[in-house]
Length: 265
Image (tube, rainbow, N blue to C red; front, side):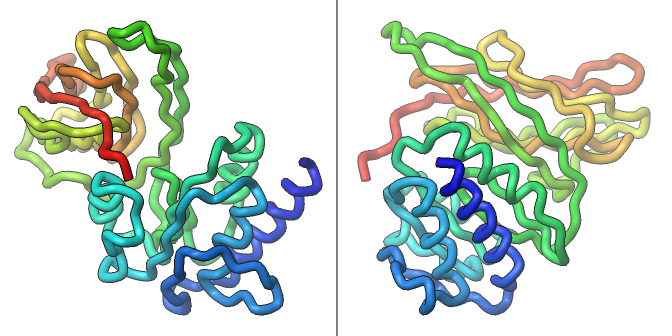
């Protein structure tokens, strides 16, 4: 396993360095086998398949190449369409990846230093055209669904300085995702921007009266943002976003949603 991790780490650094955002070609669903014949986007499935069995993958160099037929379900396709600025982008799913191997992949991408900022989230590796300020956090809490089925509420995200919603008026909060009354799947995207000339201390997400996490750093002293995903069990949920102003005032907005299982591919 160590040899595989070292081999994959070396190759991953190679593809991050070699695959320029303007040079790649759209990939297909088969996994390339011949290393000598690899070029551009072919490196992604070749390398990642060394970490575990690839269930599916897609590769695109621009938003126009994000096609429904390259994704296993409607909701993964819709999620991919929401991200319009990270290209080239390789999205994939590995069958039962070992946690230590996946952590090594994340660390390798995070440690890469070069002209392009490479990031990984939503099971996609993508290039960003600018050097943003990131906020990174991890939470892991065991929970039980209504039918006593244990699931994992976990999040490991990198949040960029690009606004996920329109900037609101002074001393207000734009909680743009999810929409009130929306039926959606897990993981749930939560996106908001809070603004105040007095200063914004943090943004905070609560679900059904339980605090999920607090974002202190993303944004500026007078404008904070959140653009992340949280894992929720199926059922009805009240998702509340709170912006805390520097004088202690809390600005709150709540979206009542229904989480359902994603459709079978």
